[in-house]
Image (cartoon, rainbow, N blue to C red; front, side, top):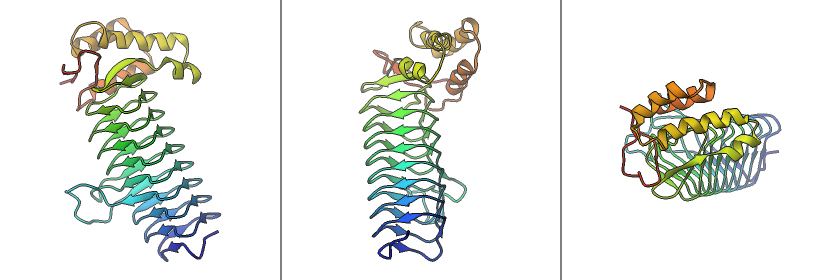
Length: 267
């Protein structure tokens, strides 16, 4: 059902069984997949391609121009997957250049007032709490949870199965499987409660904890901690992911409590 009080451009492609409520705005060059619901006063702007079963709540703006001085007015892209809940006043910016893309995966919950900057990527099954803010080119890996009012600065990453507590701000990468809290943001331990609830074995959780003890409790450099992990921790897909995440870091990783000013960067 498309309300006659909604604006839907003739060049928009609308799937089957889509509901567009009064006063919604659907721009040209938009694709909306089957079974989506667009609530009143939501705007879906040019360059947005959306999958099926998405709900876009009041006041949300999808495909807004990037807040980037490098943007030259080109037609750029925002890609949204399936089964997402995009709550009130969420703003998602499309990419800065035609070669780039802002990507929102599947089964993601974006709560009220969240902003996702240009060229960000949010992978499947993530939750971003009220008023979270991602600067440009951030990457949130699958199944991460950002509690309310978390700020992630440009080009930073958050690893899978990580929980970032409310109010944190980070200019560094946050590794997978951990809890992060405080300002300055610090490592607070393993996200063991969630890992157990999601079926990780006790042996796997202990192995992850042993790896992070080398990084955050051994008193050595990050480079040496990585070597120690390879020597003393049993290999597994989870350990491989931790190591690759750290070794691929360009921003460095967050510190532990009391070490906020120490560099945790891999050269």
